[in-house]
Image (cartoon, rainbow, N blue to C red):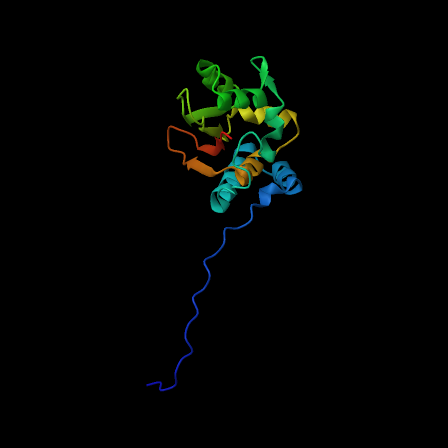
Length: 176
């Protein structure tokens, strides 16, 4: 039997979420050089899932990772103008088709004529995302990791036998 008093155990701090190595564009480029597209996507998605949402700038109108998309013109308008119109509450019936052209889904919005027009947007980060071509044309290969760093929430649906993996970055439009 041990009669010596043991020092009290100090609780260990919970492990902080790791750093996503895919945020480094050089690392992403090296991985892409040596790995198939689907495998690179899986590895990046795993890293995003482990680190979670960065919550650095959750408003889609100001998030730095969405700067590339905000300047692109689709359906006659830039995304930046579309987002501002949603916040203003004008042309409500056009919001969903506008956003779909960029890979966004309108997950929730206050349609009331009075009051704040807060909205919840989900950017598709899957392999077949419409946003992928827009980011690729701008030369941003690791856009998924950058978007995950800014968004409020990351939602990853694991693949099944019949459906591929789906991933979404959730952003908000907060009315002033």
